[in-house]
Image (cartoon, rainbow, N blue to C red; front, side, top):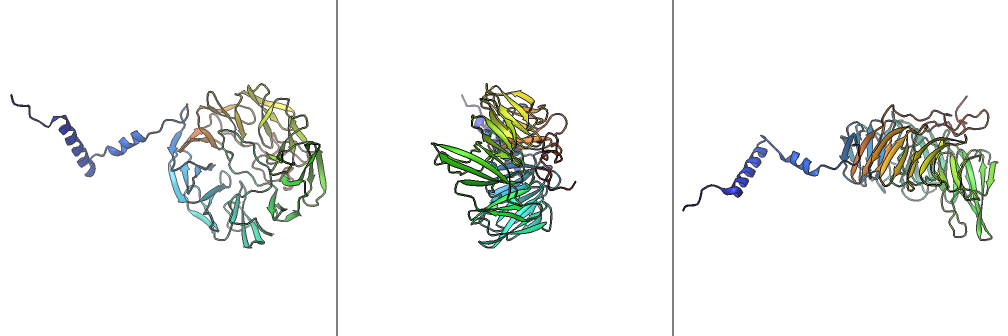
Length: 473
């Protein structure tokens, strides 16, 4: 009996593949892009789903919301995406990048390692707005951009620019800015933030420039007034001292070893006169290690406040301007985050996070949270990262009202006025806050109360100084 004719199933499959290839090559029909999109489609990184989710070229080193764009810094490149859709707007090769400016005047500053100079880019188009070929270091703030250029190792100038400015506001001389080419935001003598698991250290974006900056140069500290460019102090620390510039004051922090323990003292100095304005003893600002009380770290804190440990092991928040005790936690409580206005504290039984208004002595809100929850404060939202189940929650920092609640293992990367960027590996996504957009507190609203006639500590966007001493009226 003769076998049935025909191609068989293998032949039929081969013929179908040939037909598809011919149709794709002639442009009639091409199923391959859609097929690859289906194969490469990522699982949603949160529940509920984000507004958009995109895979970037490499694991982000930093993510910043800059106006209507999202700036993603990677190891050898920087890219910008639309905040509304996640669509890539532009991409540039760069070894480092940083964002300066606020919601309406943001710029992206990029440069290369071991190469002088930088470029200021438009965050929407990537076009170069300004180019510099001599600077060795750049510091980026919400309302100011600083750069440093050096004729030689001991002859440098620091210039201040508006983020989109074309001429410097002022230029100051300093005898060096440390050795080597420094890139973006090299360390100055201020405060260091509390760490939080699954919340990026730069989640709040660029801050307003402090009224004073402390530049460590050749074992001395040069205190620079950021309003005028004047160098107010040139101070060498004592043998047991560490110097820090916080809240418009030069702080001398002493750690002395005696009787098998460390004894601490803090002195706040007027930067213009050098005279002592306040002092406090017994508060450990966690600047020293256990080996002979040597101080190797900046004090913990944020903007104009300091975090320390009192002699009874309770944590405390101090006003850097006048040394006032703004908050002392109860026994067993732990500070998770702090800014000029509020402090987030994990209660002793580790079942909740409580928001305290600094200097007012009252609780603003409370939120159930696990024993390992992390937290951060930004101008637009307080962010909590919890485990079992893994969650990210954004809350109004003043009222505790819920802005977003996500079941996700992703990290909080950036917070803006209308939402936040979360990410896991190369995947990033945008979460829109529910309800009305949240704005930063105006100056004095919920801020740390000051002495009579001075007003409160300014809100996050205010650059008048911790007691508005830099602004008229």
